[in-house]
Image 1 (tube, rainbow, N blue to C red):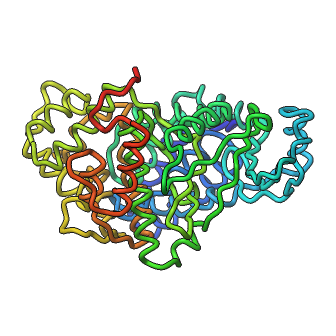
Image 2: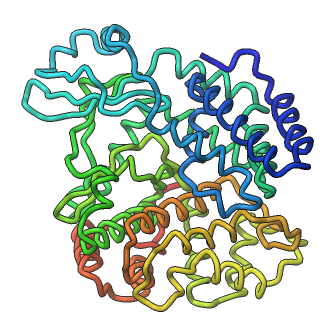
Image 3: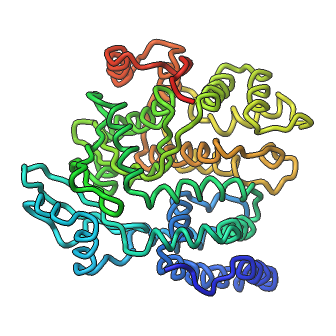
Amino acid sequence: MPLAGFTARAAGGRLVAGLREKARDDGAVERFHERTAERYAELLGHSRGVLMKVGQIMSMLDTRAVGTGGFWPYQKAMSRLQADAPPMHPDLVREVFESELGSAVEHFAEFTAEPMAAASIGQVHRAVLKDGRQVVVKIQYPGVAQAIRDDLANTELLATFLRFVTSASGVKADVRAVAREAAARISEEVDYRHEAAMAGRFGQLYRDHPFIRIPEVVPETSGDRVLTMTYLGGMDWAAAQEADQDLKNTWAEVITRFSQANFRHANLVHADPHPGNYRFGADGTVGFVDFGCVKVVPEAKRLLWVGMFRAVLEGRKHDYRDLMLQAGFLDAESDLSADEMYEWMSEMQYEAIAAPQPVTYTPETIARTVRGLFDLRDADHPMARMNVPDDYVFASRIQLAVGSVCAGLRATMLARAVFDDIDNAAEPVTDLGKLHHAWVRERGLPSAFDHHDHP
């Protein structure tokens, strides 16, 4: 249901005022944060709406390094939303099936009543089709789509929640740009036909790939609120973290290549990169299973994105600033110099790539990146003097989330070589790079700087 009776601006104002009132006693501040975080987690968990989804998104980042650390209690509470969403009653599952599929349920030879996962928008069940294929079936909670539409109709709800979070942490952010882009992606996530189409595009892009696995959509058992895809086997995140280190290094490179190749060979951005969406194969492959949050980048923006990336890696300071201006990160009158921008970006955002190779990803590496992106208490910080264009809102989150996965695996890899070969700036030196390039040539796919046939 929607958040009945919840007035975003008033609630945000009361909570921020409460923070100030409690600021005289550090212990009281901590207890206030913990109590308020529990209230927010309970509110979001029962809403089945926009804020629950945003809570899940934000819970993926380790915010102890951000600003005052004031958001950490909220992250800790909201992390439960990734796994603790209560499942639907079996009678409701049957109702959704009958409404969406009618006689199509006859295609299932087996259907596991207990969900294998339950999240903000729906839950996932294992099943077997009559033709013997093993599948997973996503079933959307009744009313969640309308709840999210109602929440999005309250244009202040999302922005005020994000404003409160940043205020609690003592950081600055362009919350309206983030709110607009988050709202666009979340509104698409409740449309299972849209997700099916995106899964189809990724499946077509990665057809016959040597180490990236994409499930196939089963159209005859899919609808507006039911989505059936072939089952991808593999370890979950907990098991993957206990695997042999060489295998973990391989998985980290696969995930990095996937996140970067999507928009270099196509115009696709997988904007929800977290371990729950990966299936780790014992053969070094990785399966990617959720395509509800996908950004399609216009070609002109995509070329600027890749161009900015290469300019930093190659030390072309003035080119980098010019491209940032074209992309909309800077206003024409901005006083940010090329030297300032390059120093900030090269030392913070591309730390792993610029470090002596091979590099090992650690939580400390990611913490420094988080501080560089979000700790904006200094008014002269470059990020505090930039805009955040809507088309690039998810770029930092993707970088941080993928880096956090690599850190969770304690992965060691030739990060610079991976990014150089994926841009065709150098020949591949890793085994995965050689396999990927052979596949690209066989498929005849465009490279990063080739023009894509996309608006």
